Length: 360
Ligand SMILES: *Cc1c(COP(=O)(O)O)cnc(C)c1O
Image (cartoon, rainbow, N blue to C red; front, side, top):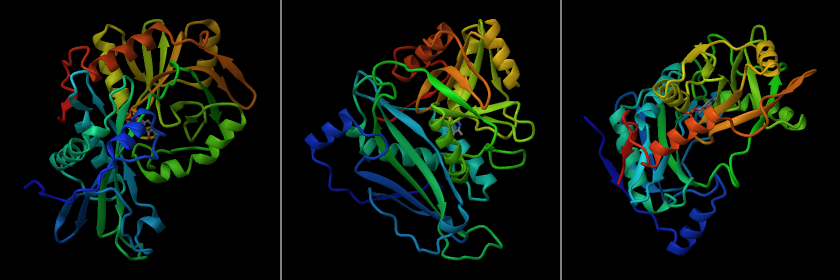
């Protein structure tokens, strides 16, 4: 049986103030009027589903999330189309990935239909927060944390809280697509075989801030994560997946368990194959990346994620090495795939895959 939501309306942010915030949002700091909360315990399963005013959560200091870090999240976007309607992009894929992350961290699964109903209720209620400006969107952040007030570690928490909040997001690329530079992290590792690398799990991010700071000190935008054993094979970059373009052939690291299975990655593979670009899910080594960039065989590299879509990578730096790819402008394959993807999201192109989920 699907969940029934109780509704407690928020005092809305005044129209003029909201219009100002939606026009030029400081990303991730301003949230819509409402949030979704749903609770879970062993006796009742998922219950007490609410749409309520955005605000602080009541949690005990002994809530397990503060001590043992059981916390997972998702990230997806809703777009406003020129006709005023609001759509979400592949929310069913995020619902499924949330449950795969939940399984890995020993948390309960939330039925996909309840995830979608919660998303529709929140985004539908706060639809005025979905920006109209092309390239802008509403970023939706579902997450789940362990709330049992107990320091016992002999078993996972017996209580959980699932929440959805949403934030208006401006264009990631003010003034056009800017390429990013990459720092090869050989000192730190994000994920190891058998670990939690393929879950969208909070601890994976806490462990990467130090390397990200090091990248910045080296004048680079993002960290490239390498395999834990040899520090030779590329997994992903920052919070994005990577694609390597050899003329018209694409290679992306296979989902070995140590990288995040991006929804954008999956969309890019599908789009590329249908456009006639062969795509291989395989392995890319750092020495090959460098040699193929030097020989010119490697023509483009791009990262992809919900937040930044497709972004060219133009420069790579490591402890004793540095090289560039192309001339720093987005290559033709990156540009084509990016246009196809945004075209489907905004309804400018047909959606043969059923990726677009109408909300209102
Ligand atoms: C979220 C995320 C991605 C990209 O996933 P999308 O579903 O495409 O947004 C890639 N890598 C990491 C580590 C991530 O957290």
